[in-house]
Image 1 (cartoon, one colour):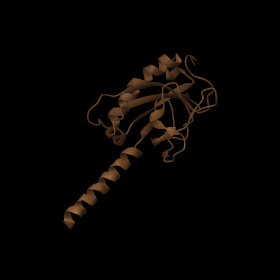
Image 2 (cartoon, rainbow, N blue to C red):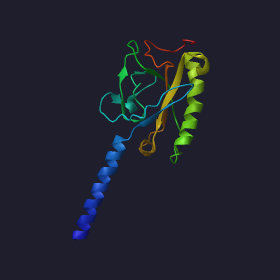
Image 3 (spheres, rainbow, N blue to C red):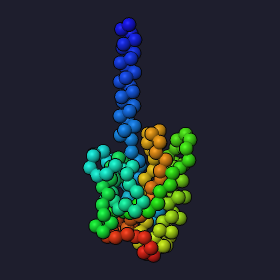
Image 4 (cartoon, rainbow, N blue to C red):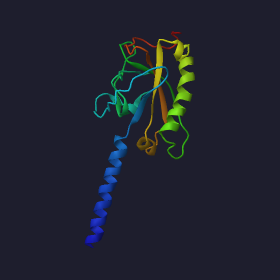
Length: 167
């Protein structure tokens, strides 16, 4: 009987740890396009909005965000901001394809949509793009979204939308 109770207690503890891991799982942010920086910082605080609540058209103050993130400040686009979410697409269901495959998919998704959104390719623009993408942990929780964001090449803040700027 003690063994059963001990095994049950261990199972419940492992289940709790697993659930906490999924709850804390976030997305990764990777610089893309013709520029970007990766400071190596990880956002682990509760400041900002849940990364899974970001929608196309949202403006973000995410210049200090990189690696795995769980929250990002969403702001009104009329205010100075770091980036703007311009496109989202879910990857197909299945086993986690690996980080390299996800990054390749994100590049294939975000580059042409950047051109459509801004009006010119990122190589010819004062803006570039990056993307939020699923981690292995968030994939296990059902996250499949690639979220493309546009930002200024010189990392200065933007006021208003970059949609259709042709620059």
